[in-house]
Amino acid sequence: MIKLTVHSFNLKLTHPFTISRGTRTVIPNIIVELQYDGKSGFGEATENKYYGASVKSFKTAIEKHRPLIEEINIKTKPKNFWNRIAPLFKNNTFLLCAIDEAYQDLYTQNLGVKLYEYWNFKIESIPMTSYTIGIDKVSKMLAKIKEKPWPIYKIKLGSKNDVQIIQALRKETQSIFRVDANGGWTVEETLKNAIEMKSLGVEFIEQPLPASDWQGAKQVFQKSVLPIIADESCEKEEDIDKCYGYFHGVNVKLMKCGGLTPAKKMLEKAKLLGLKTMAGCMTESSIGISAIAHLLPLLDYVDMDGALLLSNNPATGIAIEKGIITFSDKKGIGGSLIHQ
Image 1: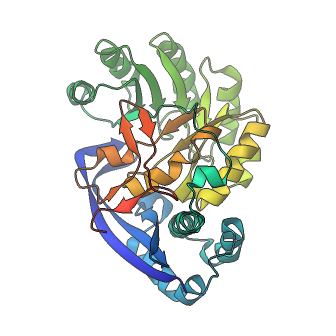
Image 2: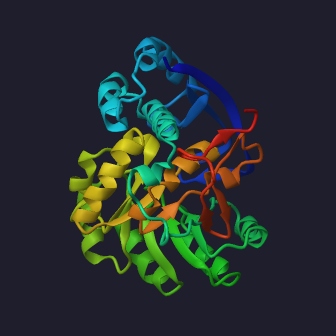
Image 3: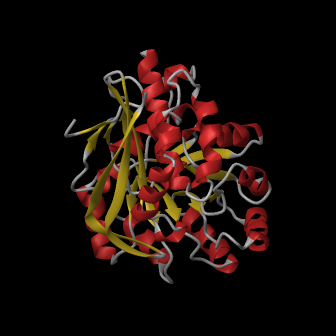
């Protein structure tokens, strides 16, 4: 029988982290641990007000369905496990993600393989991760770039002087820039900013408009001189088809869609449609970040720096050095809690 344990942490950011919706300094989270035959599988969920996700709701829901999770036969394939539990957590995808990650981890450890090996993926050619610079005074954004030299930066924007910010940052580094407005721009701002930012070496723009503005997204898709990647507009599997013809690519996040199982399906579908593929992270520990890593062979771009932004990462897992991702030696997803 599987044993379920829930660990709680308050993840502290090294620097206050600001996007167009607000600032955060601490992120409460849970790590789900599933134990069987001396092995532990781990998965992660973090609080997020925008998506209505809270530690309280995680704990309430998981206790309600604890018996069903613990009674699962360890020989049940992960996709069948997900199909069985997904209806129970359809309004709590962050928690569903944590449970799915933990089971994928435990199942593949039990087989004695890494998750990407179970999927028959090759990792010889995988993208580097960007490093995120949150919205701040330009002087502080410049200081963060100096503090963390990196080949690719994801710049959070959403102010009235965004072009000036990119101009100032470009004077400091020749690294690739990707910008993310988190829905903070209008159609007119997006088209104008895209022209200016293309000349400043910006590679693409992520979610410039509010997620509900599909009419605006169509205009931007047709007229923008830079590729546009969906984030908030792409949450669930059915959103991939919706994004086709409105975005040049999609950013899939495990917590938004409910875990590795649906994320893999979404990315495979996006590739079939000819969309650029990206996976992103929340501000999360090395447990959640290590899970994302196994999707790298499906990706054109990745943003999995969440654990690098923390001052108290409670876990170990994949290593990231100047954008280059190295898998851990551990089987499964490769993450462990430090106190284990």
